[in-house]
Image 1 (cartoon, helix red, strand yellow):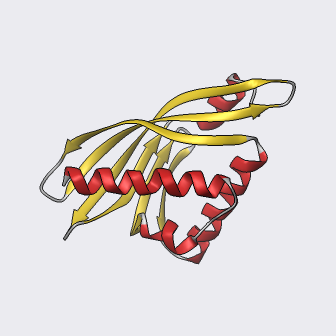
Image 2 (cartoon, helix red, strand yellow):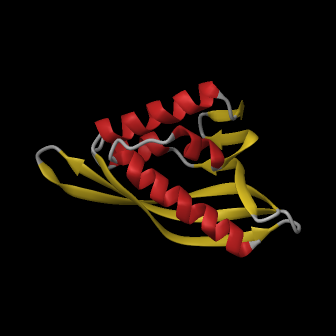
Length: 143
C-alpha cells in the first residue's frame, strides 16, 4: 500500500506543478480521485462526485492559484496512518511558493490529510481534511 500511495502523491505533485503552468489534463486530474469523495475544511464538510462539475471546479481552482501568483507546490513529506489493507490517511506536508507584488516570493508550509483507497496497485483520494487556506494566504499577504 505505501508504495502505491507514494506514487499517487508523486503524480499529484507533478500534476499540480504542470497545472500551475497552465498545462491541465483533466483526465489525469480525475484519475487522482475516487468516483466519490468527502472534503472537510473550516468552511464545512461537502461531498462530491468525480464528474464534469468536479473537473471544472479543479480547472477553476488551478486558474485561481495562477491568478494569485502561485509559483510552485512541493511535497515536503508524506506520512501514512494505515486503517486497513486498502485504506489509509496520508498526512501530506506541502510548501507553496507565491509571488507577491512589490515584495519577495513567500513560501508557506501547510498540511492536508487525505483519505486514500488502494486496490490492485491503484491508489485514489476519496477525501481530505484541510485547514483554512484563505486565512493562511491572507496572513502572508497573498490575498
